Length: 87
Image (cartoon, rainbow, N blue to C red):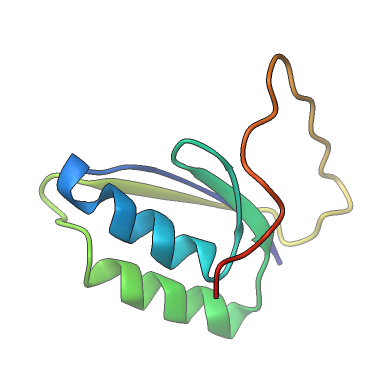
């Protein structure tokens, strides 16, 4: 499956959330990552994120596209991020 994840978390947890997400996905720009991920790894990532975020302050949204077939991407302005993962 192909997912896009966006988050808005307290500044104290931003780096931890980014680091955890980069273990599974490609960083696109501030607070946005995307990439192919297995169902098992998505479940694992969500479990790990749940130990980092504060449910009363933070927000994480996961868009599940199931396949990249219908996915298109258009960038306006500077392309940020990179296609490398940190493992």
